Image 1 (cartoon, rainbow, N blue to C red):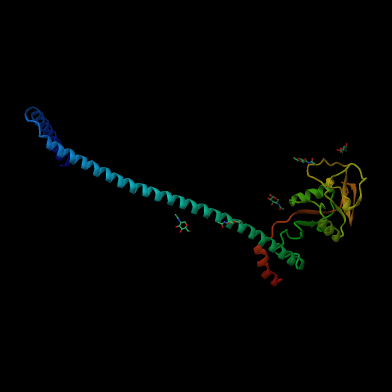
Image 2 (cartoon, rainbow, N blue to C red; image 1 turned 120 degrees about the vertical axis):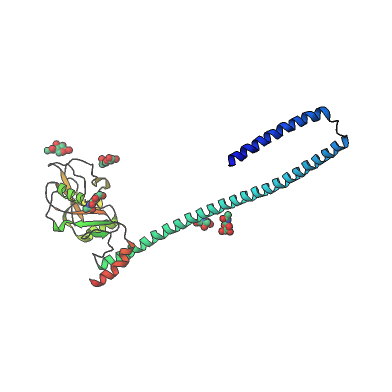
Length: 264
Ligand SMILES: *[C@@H]1O[C@H](CO)[C@@H](O)[C@H](O)[C@H]1NC(C)=O
Ligand SMILES: *[C@@H]1O[C@H](CO)[C@@H](O)[C@H](O)[C@H]1NC(C)=O
Ligand SMILES: *[C@@H]1O[C@H](CO)[C@@H](O)[C@H](O)[C@H]1NC(C)=O
Ligand SMILES: *[C@@H]1O[C@H](CO)[C@@H](O)[C@H](O)[C@H]1NC(C)=O
Ligand SMILES: *[C@@H]1O[C@H](CO)[C@@H](O)[C@H](O)[C@H]1NC(C)=O
């Protein structure tokens, strides 16, 4: 239906156009010129129309500019707000970070107090049986038979640990307090036994690093007896101490184990 109507309309328009053209042709040929005052009136009307249009455009343009400006301002304000928000977020996360560091320090202090009273307190950041000192954990081979230096080193490795090293005064005092006799030290194996003395005279460069050297039957390994050290054949058997880094104290573990403690 609608197609037919459109077609009819088109046809009608077409025919009226041709009619117009014909009329126009006739008009050019036959009609006399229109008087000039009519033309003047038409010109005035046109000019007026143009002026009105121009004014309208101006007003529209003004409105548009105003809207654009407002949009621009809004955008800038939004950008300011967003960057402010971002800054506040950064500040907040910085505050949270420093707070959680402080909280962890407090938890660690508290846990040390608890550890002094109960060596197996749940907050201890070391595995069971291991001692906790400063930021490290230590395991005495008390329950194992004596081993060669290399075997001892391997056992410590299995615990993700290494043989005892003494690299600070605090650790030195702690180790002295344990009064260890005949325990292997994590010193690099040597070809001679010329080095011995007090623990605090050990050259820092003598401590073992895993890739130092190959060990064979003719090498000598360091061991501790009370506050002194000496070297003996690496194939001798002795006790040993493993050490590894402590984990961080879990804040929940400090609080939770208070209850568990009551049961013990
Ligand atoms: C920018 O922040 C101010 C104050 O928080 C608020 O009043 C204003 O509506 C915000 N502007 C935008 C565009 O979000
Ligand atoms: C962020 O922190 C700094 C100082 O730490 C301060 O000067 C600034 O005003 C803070 N900014 C916000 C948005 O809180
Ligand atoms: C040693 O570390 C490895 C990998 O980090 C881990 O899979 C293993 O359980 C750890 N062993 C011990 C005894 O902690
Ligand atoms: C151990 O190996 C690392 C890299 O593999 C090297 O940088 C370091 O110097 C070595 N240490 C010794 C004592 O050879
Ligand atoms: C043991 O190692 C040292 C130095 O690496 C070497 O001089 C010596 O010949 C080695 N001995 C044996 C039995 O392999």
